[in-house]
Image (cartoon, rainbow, N blue to C red; front, side, top):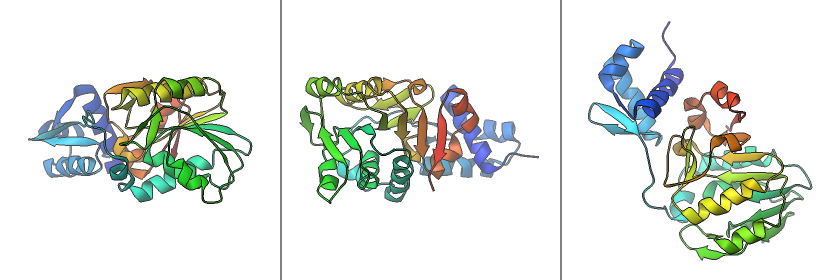
Length: 257
């Protein structure tokens, strides 16, 4: 019996990670399905931002050469980010101190946490909008240089403040998530600040990533995936990730729906 489409597409992603480029005919022979079926698989994966189509095949969506504007990111995959935010917020307990980094997905986490009696330590400037909406959480901003593209602060001052906090949990957004390349971002200062948050977390490190971030490798590594405990993603991300492979790395997979 042949593989169901989701399993076949997951194996295609694995092959692209290994071989960098795949060809339609080779995949057709390998999985014993028609060329048309493979083209549909690759078109679907490309539509989800997981691969880039090439003439006769596909390649890994390797990088984000330019940091996108926060407003651009906030307008994409809005439904998926909201359900991811709710699922991640459910992992937080009363009294927790939580690091949350910058990003549109982590903004949705903060929105979902607005009635939780916790302390949020963040470089995500837009958290102030949620705090102004009669939020129950205590908000601590890390200092640093303001970055208009990401609505965040970062730099040595941010790291200095983070260095004086031990958080129960960290909820981390990413620009790229790859089992081989780790967590990545196009901005070195953001990578440094997020890495320090992870290092100063004594409990679980939770990554939140919509499916379009899975398989993406950006310019600067934050940490290897072995440093995280939980990955919260959407149905698209869940369809191309192997729960068993993540579990072998010590990572729990939560698919938000």
